[in-house]
Image 1 (spheres, one colour):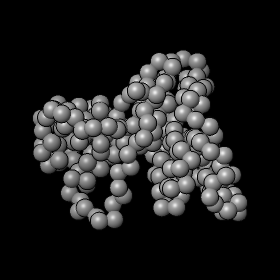
Image 2 (cartoon, rainbow, N blue to C red):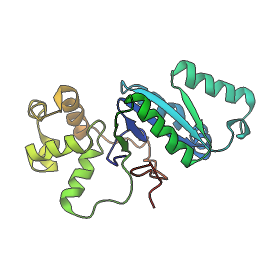
Image 3 (cartoon, helix red, strand yellow):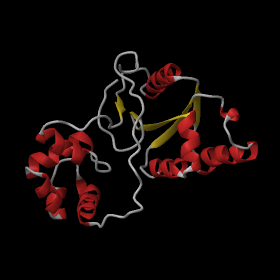
Image 4 (cartoon, helix red, strand yellow):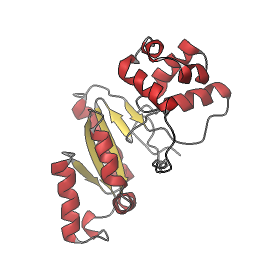
Length: 208
């Protein structure tokens, strides 16, 4: 499995986004309103989405049966997102491999891991880290932008037409970068949610 920078979900397998929720995070994100918002945002990316629920039996969560039924129906029917259940991180790793084999028809498929961890140490990686964190950009596009413009300032002040000339950017992302650089910050902006665990290479093992 390849570890890389993503701006959405926890894993990208081919054209499928996998969002992983431990039982604790599932319940917490349900209570604070993150769950449905995150799933809707993933659906709006135009990719297939799978939710993995990992941990305690979902029926043992501190939520009434009727409320739980409503939550599951919203996920399955309204959002049209399938939910797979695993008991622990080992089963989750096996499930990810099964998904990759199914999607890739038993050809090797890259599993891309979400952006996480400590901030990079040097200037060049810091610049790349900042750009790659923009929605829809990632490492490859961030590198293209920095190669084209040479600095973050030049990227953020570039006109849309110049941004569109960068390989793999196009008019949609160009407009998005242009708008983000010129939009006012809102106090209601959602906080960054840290990632708890990382599944690493080969047999999709937990990184030590």
